[in-house]
Image (cartoon, rainbow, N blue to C red; front, side, top):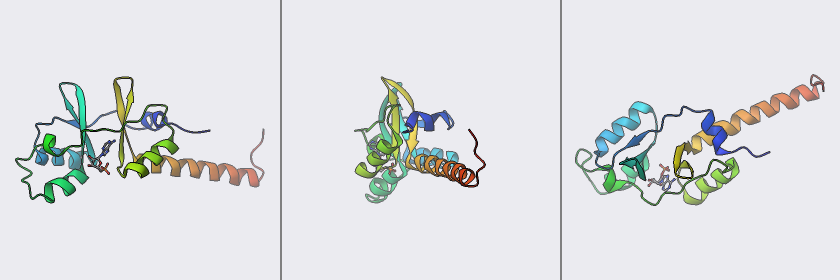
Length: 147
Ligand code: AMP
């Protein structure tokens, strides 16, 4: 059976971390650091318009010697977003991370934003499932599983 990104979202906090495009990179970086996250969705007037991640700070801000106190999120964000649907499987999400070489996938149901799944969330989920499966198989081999 394939698990979906919706199941990962159900097991995480439902806070969606976001920032306005007019916010400075410095304030966005503070928000990421305070929340221990690597990405913020960019939302203006309740519309999702982009994503801003720590890699944008490295690849666009530092690379171009911009000032974090004056450069805005809107100048450095990525606008062409790739989304997942709640029914997207974990294997499909992993394939998307590999194909596009990014680590964050906003999950959209119709026009409702449900959250963000990161490659770290997927790894955590896979590890915990593997551990459960190993425990189950070990019990089975020891003859401790009865039907
Ligand atoms: P990340 O590896 O997620 O930190 O992101 C690497 C680059 O891809 C950054 O420029 C991000 O703005 C961009 N990015 C991250 N997630 C997405 C996404 N779901 N759709 C489009 N671009 C993204």
